[in-house]
Image (cartoon, rainbow, N blue to C red; front, side, top):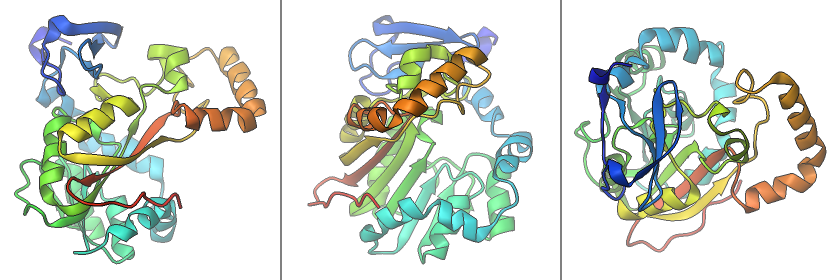
Length: 300
């Protein structure tokens, strides 16, 4: 990538500049770095906004995103999202839910079927139009910060596999805090940089994609960033590890088969340790707007 397509940025969490960032490894010609002060992991220098947003073109959605889902089935889609919908239901007061980075709106469709008044924001013009025209959803083609939404108007704001793509995650989380009502919930899912797969395979872990994933979070750094943004985490957990999905094509097939066999045989022992030490592939985060006495989210 040409120098003109790259930009140097300070740490998004503490503001430290490049000299304080430690280079971890490079991939696709870009450096993944860690802030020496607050330990946030991010790509620096990174592609400028126009290059980042090229990824979310019509071609990406028609040739990659939508084919991965297959033919849209509303009932199957609702079932796929039932776990999170059950967990957030206790926060329903105004009945308003926002999905930031909603893509074509599959989660919004599921939430609407559960009775929520839904809206979304999405930077891809194609995806936002698809959700409006094909699914009849209210999707604004914008960033969350620039969408012109009413402060304090949402019970729940979700960011599913979104935060790692954003140029300014701290700014977006401040917007989330501003838009939530008192006691409202922010739900976030994002890759876990402390994943066992990342610790073992480094840059070969498929989630490391610095041309589109420009921030990487751990339980510690996501907690710190949420707190600085006016949101109080009530639960920061990880799930399991996938021994194939993000490793195939990046790790030697023989090594991968041995690794998969070991994990499968040891899973009853390994699984509780993965969750206890929070080294699963993904982070699942519940956080509420500060100044409210909260209940721990349901695990259902």
